Image: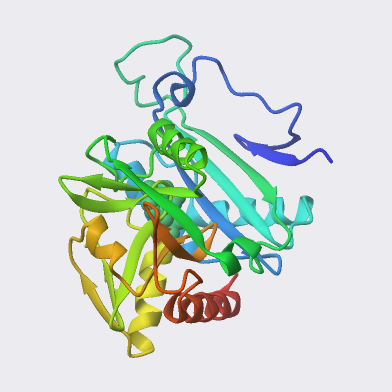
Length: 286
Ligand code: PLP
């Protein structure tokens, strides 16, 4: 089925949507993005994504393509036009194009490009992968130093996923100066003696929208949380581990670099947090 996508003010069949070959997103990865999940035809944590998008734009001195209200309208219209019950909405804003390639930013009156499309994912919430749990490998984190900005520079994370697949695993955790930063496309946690440990926020990691929600929910459920640096070895000695992201919610991790955690099945805290997250997010969806 042909999707209807959104490009700079127009709703078009995906086969007719066009962006300039001079677009800075294409030539320089000069673009930021967001991925918002859809459950029951409604948007999960739209506000959180809109706020982070604005922060990414501000950090890169990129103009906002439209207001938050207009963005919400576009999201909702795409869900409706594409009949999405469970799935994802991808949004990308680029610095646009002034019709040539130049390292210097185009003049300030160059309009940003705004592209959105849906990904239909029936069964996103009731995922078999989450019931099984993920196996991860660790790799060196060689990304740039502003990982708090959600840019489309995703080549290395993409290579990391491929390294994991080649090793017969599902994902990779990135390690810098001996400490885990995050997963290729998620934030990383382990649980030891009931305490949830995750790296504190800084420019070293993406400030996950799901991370914020899950930590709040964990706190409300009286779970103990420690935000501090941790190593792969410490996580390998944990009772359980998990990752969070807008597209996979809370994903249990059952193996790290070939070392099985607990009995090799998703741990109780990860399973509970996934349940709470899905329930509360569905209730608050817009
Ligand atoms: N860290 C990285 C590097 C990511 O790419 C993502 C999501 O794409 C996350 C963390 C999780 O962020 P969120 O919960 O906002 O999806």
